[in-house]
Image (cartoon, rainbow over all chains, first blue to last red; front, side, top):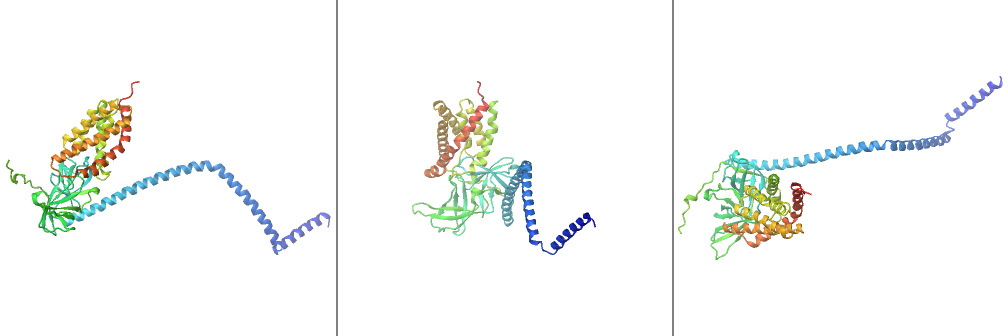
Length: 278
Length: 164
């Protein structure tokens, strides 16, 4: 055996011995130390590489993120607009459902729904403008209601719109009937939008909470439309009539959709009124 | 031809007044957009068409409102008159002139409305009207006076550009 083959044999024996010792678990702690050093070195290289990669590619990502952010913001604002629109539709649907219930419970009248599109520019007058006119068979004098009660009556009509005088208008006077007291009275509007009762006979007992309905006297309104409730009654002995304040059933500041009673024709009783002699 | 801008602008003002401003109530009062625009326009030194604008405002408001015509005609023409008098006398302080025109114009318009309602037999308490309608309307008109004046000044510069 020459020296070269002896050298090769020793190398194989050493390597084989190391392998046998390693497989036998004698190098466990040493290999753990070695591998942990390797892992730490690899982690250090990897993190630095990722940092450099982020640094190199970051500007492109910011631009794309900004674009994406703008897209999403536009989408969010579009969805918010849709939500508002849908909420508005839900509100309208609720109002219309209530009005349909009302019209079904009062089948003797025919109704035409109209949206409130404006109010009188003067704060002294209480009129609303609706989006139905003579093209929809709306005529002057027709009563206007909601499911809560009487709103007023049509005062002027053009082709596609009409002006409605509210019962709160200072020039409005409605003949009413106090259901519990079983008596007639007159409901008057005012400049400030409050409504009050007048012409209540002194010998009638009126209680707060009494229901007020239209009496139909005078032919201006149909009978039995709800107006509101008596709040207070003022009785003064030296006056001819009692007066009262009224809580209307309708919230006049929140009118959105109203119903026009189209099969009611007001009666003009002016020729029947007695002439005053000078 | 320059007055043509009055038609769309005042129509928009009357629409806004009827549909938006009249819903922005303070107690029972609200601002009067056509009145403010008319006063602000008549206060511009380059503008000579205040009376024409008053006619257009009367026609448009009269179409929407149930207020008798004499009130509108007297009221809006008086506002132009007041504004022109103030513009000649306090021309160095245009905002002061705007406030004065708004104050006097609102009071005059409400005074006319009082008178007409009283003549037509409508009972009302003077104190209630002052406290619930006139004073809140006056306050709102004063609040809107500055932005309206600024807008109308810019419009006047656009419609009547400087010849220099």
